[in-house]
Image 1 (cartoon, helix red, strand yellow):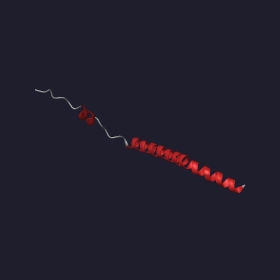
Image 2: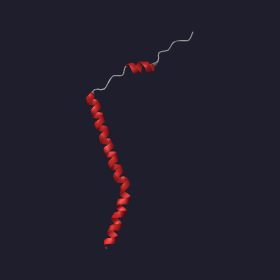
Image 3: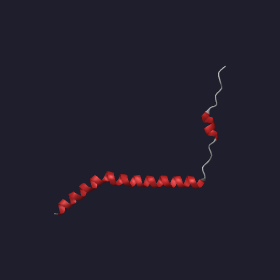
Image 4: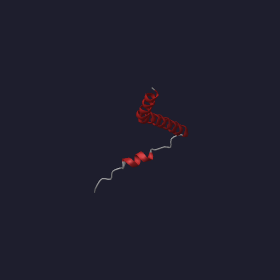
Length: 63
């Protein structure tokens, strides 16, 4: 007869607990801050080339 093995994933699932609401809120705030920083970095890095071209184009027209 084959040996019956315990499923380690069932043991892991049994040990899970709900996170406290304060910790959930802190994680959500950290994620929101990281997303804001990434969005701002994207805004400046993607549009920087176009903005510089427009700046130099308008400076050249004023001379």
